Length: 509
Image (cartoon, rainbow, N blue to C red; front, top):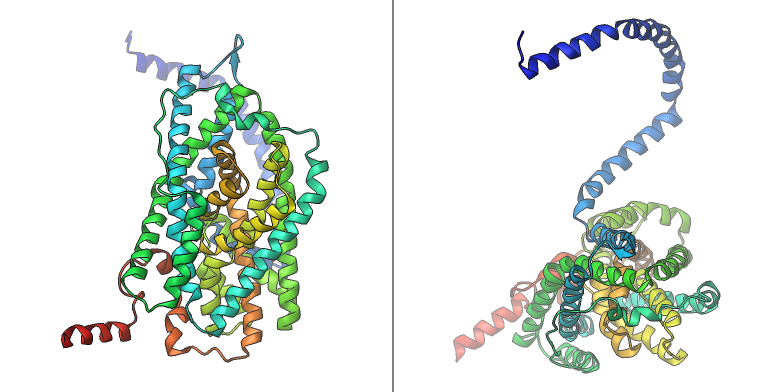
C-alpha cells in the first residue's frame, strides 16, 4: 500500500464524496422545482423591468456606476482614506490593554511621538513659507488691472466666502455651547504627559506668521502695480515649489503624524471625548454646507432667472466627482460641463469655473471655522467676537490663495490658526486631521457653488464677455486651474508682447 500523503488525501476525499452521494441526490431533486419556480417568476419580472420607467432607472444606475468607478479605484490612494485609517488604527491599538498595559509599549509609542514632534517643528518652519508662497502671487494675479469681470468674479467669490463664514459663526455661537456642554478637551493641549519624544530638533521659522502675512500683502499689492518681470516670475516659481512641498512631503506624511497624535490621545484617555465632540461638530458642518449651497443657488436663481432646484440638481455630478477627488482643480472639467448645462455661456463658464476653483472656497471656510470654534470652546481658549470677525475676513483672503489640491485650504490657514487664535502645534494638528477627514465634502461644496457664481456672472455680463475676450486679459479668460498651480516657465507668465518688447530692448543696447 502506498504511503504517499497526496494519494492518501485523494482516497480520503473520494470516500467522503461517496458518503455524500445521498445528499447530492436530494439537492438535485429539490433544485428542479426551485428552478421551475424561478423561471416562471422571471418572465413577468423581466417584462416589468423592461417598462420605460425601470429602463430609465437602469440607465441612470449604470451611468452613475460608470462615473463612480474611477473614484472607487482611486480611493485606496486618497489622502482621505489614509487619514481616516490612521485615526481608526490609532484608536484601536490604543484601546487594547493586556493586564492594564497598552498593546503598543510606551517605548514604541515614543517613536511616533518623536516623529510627531519633528513634523510639528517642520510644519512651524514651513507655515510662513506657505503663506508667502501662496498669498503673494495670488494677490499679484488678482490685483492687477485684469479686466472688469475678473474683479466682479473675485468680489462675488469673496462675498460668498464671507457669507459662509459669518453664517457658520452665528450657527456655531447658537448651537455649540449647548451641543458641547460639559465637554473639555484641555488634555489635547498637553499630550506629552503620556508619550514623550526621544529627542527634538529646533526648527525656527525664517519669519513670524504675522510678518509673513504682512509681507505677502505688501509684495502682492506691489507686484500688481508694476509691469510683469523677473520678480513676479520668481514668486510664481516659488509658489510651484510650495505646492510641491505640500503635495510631496507634508500631505503624504500627515497620516503618520495624525496617527502619533491620536495614539497619544489614547494614552491620556482624551480620545473618547475628542471623537464624541468631533462627531457632533461633523453633523453640524454637513447640514451647514447643504444650507450654504441652497442659499447660493436661490440667490443665483433669483439673479439669473433660473430654477434654483434644477440648477442645483444639474451640478450634482460635479459634487460627486469632488467627493472622489478632494481637489477643486481636478474637478474643473466636470464642473465646466455641468455649468454649461445650466445655460451659462461658454465664454463665461470657461472663465469663471477655473478661476473660482482656486478662489471660491465657501465650504472649506465653513468647515475650518466650525472645527476652530469647537476647539476654542472645548479647550478654554479666550477669543472675542472682534477676533472671530477679523479671523473670518483674513480666512476669506487666505482661501483665495489656497491651492486647489487635497488639504491645500487647511495648510494655507494654519498660520491664521496659530497667530490669530493662539493654537499650539497639537491643536493645529487636530485641526488638520479633522479637516482632511472631511476634505472631500468641503471641496464638493466649493465646486458646486462655483456653478452658482457662474450663473450670476453670466446674467450680469449679458453677453459682453466673448470667446476672444479683451486682448489684454486673454490669459485670464483662458484660465487653466492646473496650469495656474504648476506654472513655472516664462510661458503664461510673460505675454508675447512683453517678450517681443524685451527682445527689442536688448537688441537696441
